[in-house]
Length: 78
Image (cartoon, rainbow, N blue to C red; front, side):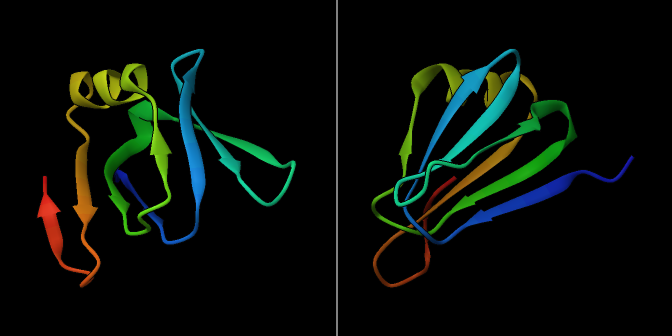
């Protein structure tokens, strides 16, 4: 199965619920969920993105690469 790459370039809040990533936009009331087992890579480009620790732990357990970008839009850590 092909894994998804999720790319976030706008301010969002990312959390965990029922083994799924919950994506909440800070300027809208919308919420979207995505199954973690379908993810291969998550790229966080915006400095105003918030991520919960339980979500990060679940991403690590499922071998999902998490790429953090700095202000110069280069990867800072993985």
